Amino acid sequence: MSATLAPPTTTPSPASNSADSSPPARTATVSSNPANPTAAAQPLASHAGTTVLVTACCLALWSLASGRLWHTDLWDHLNYGKHLLQTQTNPVTEPLLPLAAGIRMVNIPWLAQIGMKLTERSFGPAGLQLLCGLCGALALFPIARLAARNARSTTAGLFAAAIFYIVNRHELHVIRPQLAGLVCYCITLAWTLGSQSHSLKTWIGFTALFAIWANLHGSFAMGLLVLAAAAAGRACDVFRRSRCIAITLGDHQLHRNLLLLQLCSVAVLLNPNGLLVYPEIFSVSGNANTTSMFEWQPLTLRMPHGQIAAAVLATAVLCVRCSPRRLRTTEVLIFSGTGLLSAWSARMLNWWAPAAAVLLAVHLTAILRPQLNRIRFHLPVRPSLAWTALSLAIIAISLAATPLGAQLRSGTPPAASATLSRETPIALARFLREQKNLPAGLNWFPAEWAGFIMNQTQGSLPSMVNLHVHLIPEEVWSDYLRISAGSADWINLLDEYGINLVTIDKRSQALLLKRMRESTDWQGLYEDRQSVVLTRRKPL
Image (tube, rainbow, N blue to C red; front, side, top):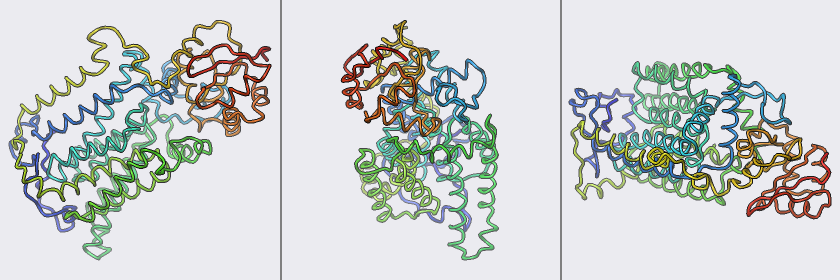
């Protein structure tokens, strides 16, 4: 694939997308936009601008790969990955939680879970850190390259990468199957907001992409929505210019967009769950249990990432108003549609961030172009194998600088305290793993810690819940929340579920801890700075 940042040089038709673009302008600062025929003779040659964008993405890779592993649903996915490898089958009912036994499970991200578990098994936590960094960098690059191509300026690509990273940093640092879905989404978005060419590689590539995506994460639905927006946007643009329904319905580009949408919708069915993947998407997002989860709540200005998103939104609207460029309907549909989804659920900010980054970066560059041109700093415009070699060298250096690179050089894995988040109950898990005479039966763990504790104890301590809350019966989840809050009937609920061991997070379950310490039926077994373990004096 040629790494040139130049836009396609084909002559646009009267109803083409380029009719909505601004007139060609002078080369902007840090630009690289030649349509050089020598690039075809050297398919591996790249422009200097590409190397600049690769460097920016490698910085993000190093930052993400050096971050600590989060303590929440990462470990649940690793537990499911371990179960998949042990049984060699994709479960149809929940396999790890006794209280959810028999509940139908449509495990869409099975392939991602296996990949994560194999990475952990081969390279330890440092391998998971690198996996997080790679996914983040692979998501950033197509967005940065798209902005650079659309604006004909590498500066726009740098703007887009920075905006995307800042808006979505809280999601990029949490490794989960969603990161693999984000990579696929950004590739789809880059095509949709770019040239929308329909070559043979496009048909084969997107069919394969969606077939794989449907086995990595349920976000393939967002990819289908983006392709639907491409078709709807194309129809609106053609009708707006032609004012004729017949011309709109006969548009060949529209037909190809619709056919690609249908083809990808069918490719999604190449998964172990078949048609069940479609209703599963809605059952997860509409599950009553998710309303109690912070990340599924509406995005508000009380959230730090909500404040950042609001600032980006206001800036984007202002830039679009002042920019000499015109908007395509597809851009408006994707930007506004994903924005509304983000307002409904903070988790959806993951899909708005790349679209907002491209729109803001391109229009901001168009506004600043006269000022940027005065700097008169231009990168070499001729593609060269030397820039490709330099890009590969930068990638190699960034990989070597990660914790996994250090581990491979020294042969010693980093300490758990250096790779896991400070909220991870490392000492607690070590204590529970070493105990031989813990009471039998169900255990009560904070949902955020359950996956890690089950992972570290090899599943020997079954938990009441974990963070796959959509698989937990509503009554069980409601009772869990009441116990966690230290409600008046906490002791009756623990008796009802036959729980003999309770682990408490001192920070979030202070009232429950206070009441259990006041009870004569429970005694302390372990305590550290963040947790307390209590057991019944007379086990049930």
